[in-house]
Amino acid sequence: MSEVQFRNFDETKAYKALQKLQAPSLSAVLDGKRVTSCNSSYELGKQETLHYNYAAKQVDNQILSVLQELSDEQQLIDKFRLIASGEYMNSGENRRVLHHLTRGQLAGSVSHEGRDLGAFYNEQNSRIADFAEEVHAGRITAENGKPFSTVVQVGIGGSDLGPRAMYLALKNHVNSSEGSGEAFRGRGEKLNARFISNVDPDDAADILREIDPSTTLFILVSKSGTTQETLTNEALVLDRLKHAGVKQPRKQIICVTSETSPLAKSSEYLDSFFIDDFIGGRYSSTSAVGGAVLSLAFGADVFREFLDGAHAADAAAMEAGILKNPALLDALIGIWERNFQGFPSTAVLPYSQAMSRFPAHLQQMDMESNGKHVNRDGEQLGYLTGPVIFGEPGTNGQHSFYQLLHQGTDIIPLQFIGFLNSQDGLDVNWEGSTSQQKLNANLAAQIIAFAKGKKDDNPNKTFQGERPSSLLYSKSLTPRVLGALLAHFENKVMFQGLVWNLNSFDQEGVQLGKVLTKQVLGDGELDPALQEFSALLGVRS
Image (cartoon, rainbow, N blue to C red; front, side):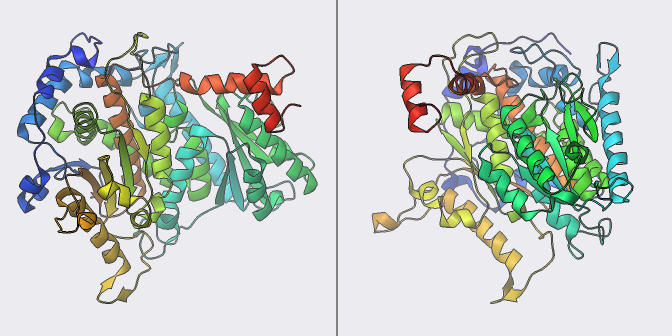
């Protein structure tokens, strides 16, 4: 590995070369041959494959060639190897970045203060697996001696968005007796899972109203052990448990936290499982943060397959050739769209109801990582960085915001996600086609409608087209495929941050509001405008 250099994007030769190139017209180039040839794939084992199709993106061989030069010039693979090998790549907090290590080694072992961190993460997974087995077998029970029926994760941000999205994505797969395959048939969900995140008390009230607290196991997730929203919601949970007659309510709570947090030092809790400062919240779904709730809900074997899929995608992301590296290719095409076509946003559109919360998770991961205006050294940047991310499942979105996507004044690149088969297998043939066929017919039609548009004598019915999109697709949404999808987007965001010379792994942008909130809740003097807004909202008189 050559010595890496960190330079701003606009200082590269490739940046200047890309400025001179023109995007091809999709109406002119998008044909059947292009659709079949513009594929880059992940082989995930057990005959599972995840494909990235970029046929409907406004790139040609010349643009792709310069994007390859950009990757080489910015040493993206070398920098990824530094991340995977445990170098201190979070420059803002002087920390390692080790979420890849939670699902397997990519570049040898990583040690910190004499501890093998890969072994540490594996140990926590094993502890979680053993704990989940004890719960499922009825050897760990609620205080009343009854088996736990529900698990509720209490956390916010990365402690909620990723795990919640992954749980919802796999629920039908595990519960189905038809669509999930022999390996999972009859397995079923072990515990129903729910999530409390917002400090708004109505969020907790809605969940606590629909469960039986006396047979519910709670997971308190806070790496620092001091997160205001999470500890406030814990107080609500403890109060509800006491009202349900539970004498030692914390014995129905497990913690996912760091070993140095106040939570880890308390013997009042049923158990604790650990993460460390090298796992960022938005990248924590493959750590104990996601592992505890997914293992308790579905079984540790499901979580293990999820990790295997993510690791397979990580290994593919080490490939230097961009056409053989789906995450890198997706990242670089996104750079082309953001910096040279000037597109402000990206819509993530899964044609799968199971992935209803996946766009919200990606929104945090992308915008919290690359929503930066300074480089790794704190210097102001003179080019665009991270786009706005949003999305909803199809076909619901078609009846919502697709109007703007098709005919609005902004062109917004689209990232479609689709599957050949449904998870559950429940379907009906109506008017000559099944529900799944109708879903995927809509998806195929939207790709072409966005790309090629339609001319009409009536301007109101004219579609200009030239709206670029990509398609991530697989046979079915399984744990391995979900893990690969997660890792694909994590690595895409990482590569884009490296191109832009950002530190994608801190989040100073969330801190100022927290500081001012503490001031409002204290008794000191406030900025006059803050004082009045606080009074308007009933916080201060």
